[in-house]
Length: 282
Image (tube, rainbow, N blue to C red):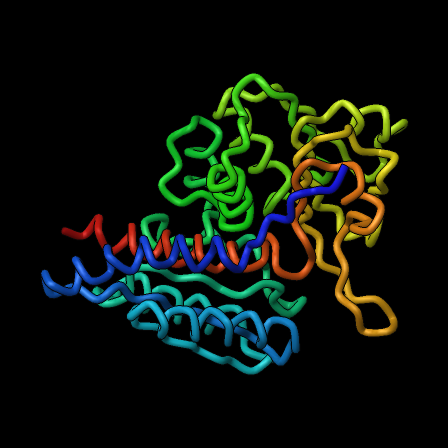
């Protein structure tokens, strides 16, 4: 069996074109969606992520503001900036790029963002809404994974979905989103005993552990859809996922590559959340 590769870049472009029409409609009514991104410190990966978000906004016609603060910025100063942006009428979406320096309480920062501007979907109010199935801001990475399944016509209802990874950013919300689509969901961790006995039963397998090549081809059900959320840099500089792509693609029916799979969809769904936040001001 040869897998069908899920081209996240191509699907992201398709989805962004759909949302661009909604940006144009907002602008016709005098509203330009606005996203503010705060970055604290000089983390190299974070700087790349923020630059990608700013570029994506420009491509979509979304106003963006990048607020760069030094690593020694006091927590109180960061909270003041968040309060200021919460009140800014031209800013519809606000996020603080994680991680923040250790002297800053990340949870306190996330809770300071106004829920109606929390386009990352991390505020407790939005997390609660996700649990109840009424989320206005679904977390971007799992929402992107769900959109990939939708665009590829991969059935979810009635299927057995296995999620490996229990993070608040990917694993838990991914399991909830699949559950809301009437999948039977098993949530595993990297420490689950006999992990392969669970993954081999998955019609849809989503992996987000941060452990390179953790899932191999012999752990996958023939014909399964495999969504690899992991992105890891090996000592030689190569980027790889949590799934061993070469062995997995011989077994899976569908599979996302790394890079070029889920990654492009994460920013796409951030843009979508920002546009929807702007639409709610009408």
